[in-house]
Length: 215
Image 1 (cartoon, rainbow, N blue to C red):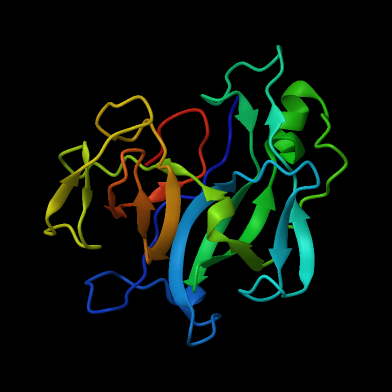
Image 2 (image 1 turned 60 degrees about the vertical axis):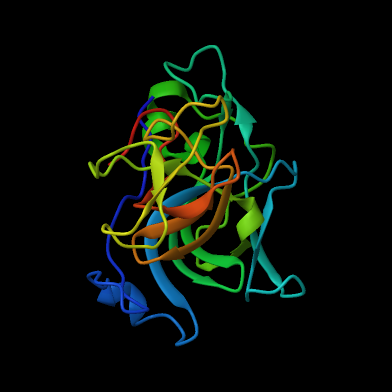
């Protein structure tokens, strides 16, 4: 099954030498950290993940992201945990919240519908506009950016930073065929994560592809 992901672009802050994505940054409030990468919802609520108007738990809910749906027998491929999740583009971060846009569940993807027919997302219509989602509801895959070596996170969001060895859920060194335990923050095309063995650090970058490696 072909599946879209949103991959690496640029951003710059905190003295890190990154190329800014000006089209994104110019549309964000000054207090929001610009980011540009993909991700997906890991919220298991059957009513979907809340997308809010502001980065706060009491902010108005302006939409929802369809919940994960189990892969079917007709799928040519499926995610490692057997669940298809709503993907989105991450454009900003503030105080434990990610600013997202372009939400798309695989079952609503026109290409997938053409190949496999329309399938249910539990009656939840995915919000496609811009809004805020709590960091604890965000997942993604380590992107394959060709930065050697695999098996470690960066201590800071820069390529010459100290490396921090980290493990996957199964205890192997992390790499572009896996996902972090938690997605914590973002800065340009860098993502701050926690690995399954509790190491916190940075990877370049996160993407929303759920079946194959992304770059």
